[in-house]
Image 1 (cartoon, rainbow, N blue to C red):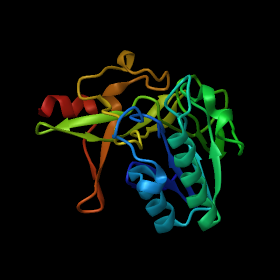
Image 2: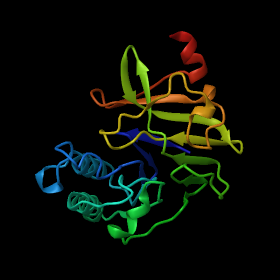
Image 3: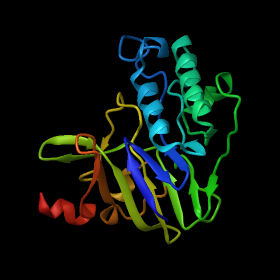
Amino acid sequence: MTVSYDDRALLRDRTLVVADLHIGRGTGGNLELPVGSGSDMVQRFQSLVDRHDPDEVVVAGDLLHSFQTVPRSVESTVAGIKKACREVGARLIVTPGNHDTMLDSVWDGPTETEFRIGETVVCHGHDAPEADADRYVVGHDHPTISIEGQRQPCYLVGSGQYRDSDVVMLPSFNKLNAGVEVNEMRASDFQSPLVTDADRLEPVVWDESGRETLSFPPLGEFRRML
């Protein structure tokens, strides 16, 4: 599978995948503005779909943050995400995550527990998938990595991680999520059951300033270098 990365998202052919938007996080204060006031998330999402003009966009779980309430600003942000897809003619699909208990209140589009792109299956990653695949693309753990004292959101790419299939874990698309530092984590420390050998996970960091990806050795080797 040939993939490319851009601003915490993954692109596979004509399909764009994002994970863990957690829309609504920070709505108790001024951390997240409604769409009409220039939501950072919607602007970034709009830029992504404009750059790549995908046929479909898949949210790999946790579109929403709250388990109990859906503030008006959440509805506005979801509407902004829908509008961005509609303007480029992209179909938007949600694979629900563990936070998406209120999804029906703001989302009436297609949902699939596991979404297949050829031999790749996209799901949130909080539960073990039922479908067989050559590669699983997931979210859920919000990986970050600390390099020279600075934490960066990262992708984690692992071969033969689950049922001898590869796993790609995406960072949270929401910049308000601090994320989990994976430098010293073992497989048992991850919440996703798809991670079975953390030492073989290779971190990939998207460098916004250079608009390029920076690849690092597997965590097992990376730890010995620090």
